[in-house]
Image (cartoon, rainbow, N blue to C red; front, side, top):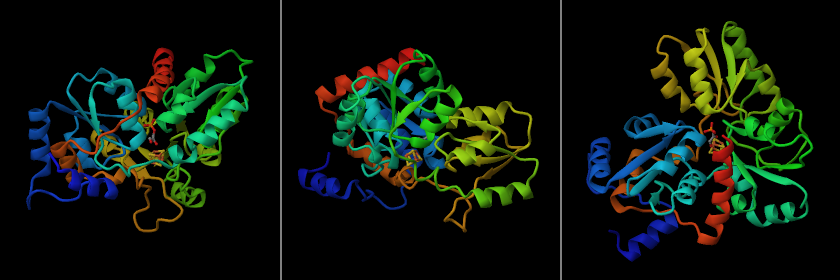
Length: 330
Ligand code: 13P
Ligand code: SF4
């Protein structure tokens, strides 16, 4: 275990950065540690390929939360961003939940500070509050139903047509739900920095080069991009689509990490990451938060069982209700 002093320093840095020895085979050591410590490694599709390859389960936000609820092991090592690990702790509180880098946040979760969100909710007492899982535990505590990009349409459609709804924090997912369900919702003004970074001009240029390619997109993307897409869905839905669909070429408008599983699933198909506005070098969009997790940090996190995710019991109980409602309606 770490000494208190080292812990404090690591806390300040947000992660533990020092490997124990040089030339360490992180993959082998992590697999060994998982066994020794009875730990399960859950990873999001946006994690780097090496992490996905040693994970016990790789999935989208919904599948990961459902999996986390069922974990029987002592430790959940969550290779994703903070709100995902926090969700695991909320729904499976007896487990130790650890996250390789505590600075792995999310622009959507940050867009809805708890205090402002509480005031907004209190100003609209006749509204049902639906929040995207990409939000803090505090925000979930002011929420009636949590949703993910996998189940948002189904859950909104399950509510009576006349129900007044607040939807937060993703304005793009919110607009997409409004268009698909014909509902009017009060939207919080947040966005994902990765999905808003796609360049429409570059995308159309790319499509001229690959006219047979289907554009497929995550609903966190902007409406003009979604309108050009042949298929819109969560990361898991996009993966399922390229497996089941008959086309041979796809331009994929979501974080480039998903291409790892797609390439494994359909090695014969052409998969092209949608181009982002800024990036002229790799022509892909990567989530800087998701990519904060590295094999070294996964190793250190499991070795020292640190940093650990904590949620106060008062917040946890309230947030768990909103997540449970999502499970019931999924
Ligand atoms: P899904 O995992 O629900 O597809 O969401 C993608 C995402 O941006 C996660 O932060
Ligand atoms: Fe948040 Fe966007 Fe990164 Fe997902 S891809 S964690 S929504 S910033």
